[in-house]
Length: 313
Image (cartoon, rainbow, N blue to C red; front, side, top):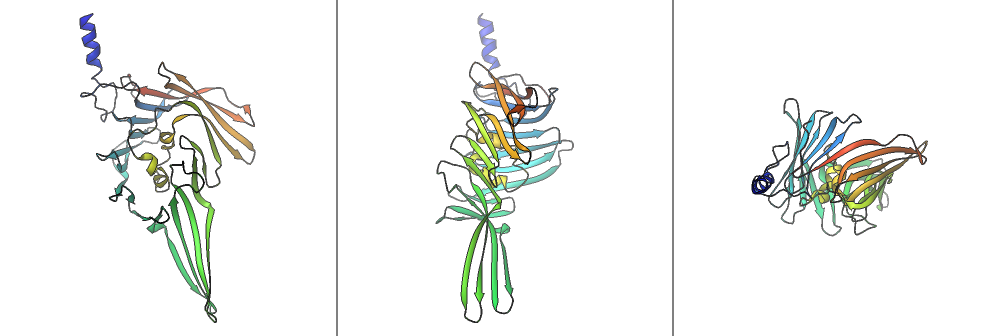
């Protein structure tokens, strides 16, 4: 029995992960922390794979179906400082974006996009998204501008996600009298907003056309130490590197995705198998249309925690 105990304790120092980033030779494994999350096909083939580091934050996202991997690098303060996308076949780089902060830990640059912070209004503008034009038609001089404004919610102070609003404005000068009319308009058609209750993302879109529901159990995929939540709204509107990050900003596990289309309300419902620690092991989905099931329940995901044996894709 003594030898078995020594062997078991030794196992706690050995990584069961298949990813090189996961180093457990100097610390005990934590069964509460996620190691990998797999999205699978109906036949069980791994299509997408999220790999988390020792601290429980995302380090790599593999899309095996589309043959690429995205890596996430952090500094010593756990601020995300680089996102890079590589081809899985030849490891060639597809795109890479450094993230730069000022002394107050506010973003100043993502890739080649420069952000300017307005302290009086507590919002950002992206300089190379701005547009300015001037027209002179004789009696009138028309000056127009547009830009994307990144700001916190105007309606809910608990919402931690930065919103994007497309702002249009201008100044019309009537030359004979020098009379000036100024105008500004926030165009919702080109905006992207997120309604978050402080725990979970409730809906999103330019007119909030996606609505989500959750259970009361802990989502193990939620960021742990990183600043992903702060960056989410900025990254989402910066490049193609965002689409898989939604699952990292929710406290609980999603049970429903609902949206409306021209044919009527459509939704996907989710349920889970849980382990003894009330953490999800497997996820399942079922499609509904106007409240009527269109599909059977089908297996969509697997969760692996530190110390678990993880299958090789």
